[in-house]
View (cartoon, rainbow, N blue to C red):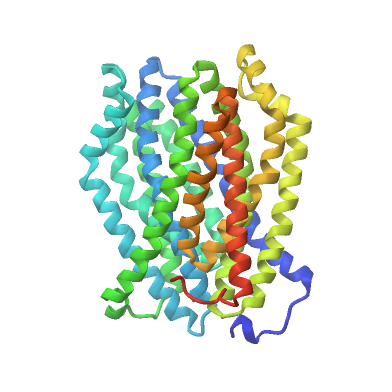
Length: 448
């Protein structure tokens, strides 16, 4: 039975459903940075500092690639959610599952085939000394073989979120992260595998998560036979258009964040360290706001699949309510405890002194940034990738870089003026696009 034919649910039920989808993803998000801490702690206690440096650079190279390929997760979520709300949910969901699996496998294979050019490009960009380069290669060479699993995990996790299986996604991610942490310790301290052991632990964890997610996804669509028409030229063109637009969107966002890191480093070591500290405030915000966005993606997509514009609007407004509430809570916490958070992240007095003047901006950050998180979720659910692409490029070229350019006399602070304005502009432009679609009664129509 589609959403359009169901009896209206009481308001409290609607909010409960959104939170039931969002909270597991918030908990799952929390485990990821904790895993990074375990990796860093294991490598940081080795006798040779170059081990930590080399493995960190190797991980960064692959992480950036995986992050850019995050469009796989977003497109899979939106299409899966729409399939769930359609008139033939099981068949349409199976179609989306196999289409996105095929696409991700091709992408994973390409990364494997290009592993040497990727490694050489990473070495050229970072220019490490011989010792660090040696450990970078020792980490990267085994870790890159996890790329097919990493790509498949993006679409499987996205598909399961679209099917509103966020509790299962949370369990899979927590098990995978705990497995990774346990294997880190076993391979490095128990078997003496050094840097390669950390990489191998990640690879095993990635394939283990893939196996769990694939089993769950296939169980959901058992009995549905794969059809050749799912992979014809028209189907491939739609998928390529959707993912291509989201890729451009991700590249524009990554360009802005990379510019902040590179330009901050040019301002000196202290500025670079301060930016690393301040980015943790951004990460903390993302833990909660991304969770709300995941829930919104699933519900908005389901409503679009059922061609229920009123439900799309209702879920958007509910998401805005909770997103605003989280943003206010973050601002209050940063206002009350921001000083303590900074001191917890570093013990160097000069860095603390340099970071404290940025606290008012950190208090303002959640209030102005939460709009873009929320509306990203709305447009993922609508699979309106062209709007996401256009608003991201406009915000980057029309807001981020001009704001930095005209305020650069403020030094490193100008980068944060630019970032906050950029995030706010993304929210405003996406919000305007949403209300234009609603006014034109085109929320349920396909992207052009």
